[in-house]
Length: 285
Image 1 (tube, rainbow, N blue to C red):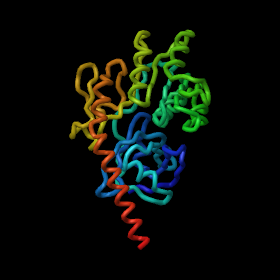
Image 2: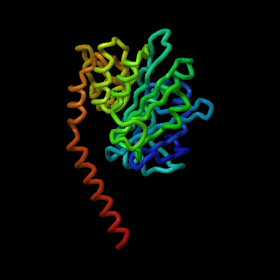
Image 3: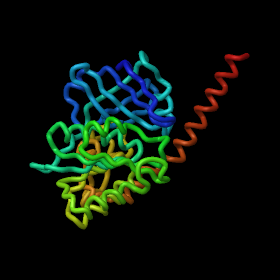
Image 4: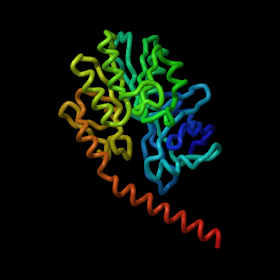
């Protein structure tokens, strides 16, 4: 079990939790993830490590409420415990040797995963450009944190309510067209965003790293649920990734696989809501 020591609601659908996990914090690196389970009957879900503090022995996770488990996780408070919290899992991000300038592109809650990438690169003395994209101003997260670990930070919103209007690919193309040379681009966010960032960089031969989020159960390569096609070959995101060459990923297959259980997820949320309503009714009467 791990105890939650800090909770921060970043926006109505995104929550930050910092938990005591000294053994994981001791070995964690940017790009790796954990798998948690709330209780003995709960499902196992993977979440990328958003930050870690080796001295305090804590791990930070940032997640969006997209299903029943993340809804329940967001209901926990400081002092509460999480039943299982396993990691660090997966391979850490590897940049090209001698990289001097990189662009870290984050989309929505994917910015939580992009942040440790930017932080690690900045600490290594690499020049870091950050492009963070959101639908609108009210869901912008981690802006101050990004500005602290980047040389240039660009906030993009779809509706233009904050920063610059447009998709992250628009700003990335502008920077490339202006003559900026990147040794690597790290793109993390919704699958379509990663796909089109990869398409933007491919004509220029810029190494592009994406962090994939397929369905995952055990995190050890045994279940095969997280299989993805990269360069025409089957890979397992939990042990071969989660980082892969964006120019080699079959994004369309990944999107289709991630949608397989959407109907069941919606049905389970409805059942949970019914149970909660019944419980409230019993408490009142």
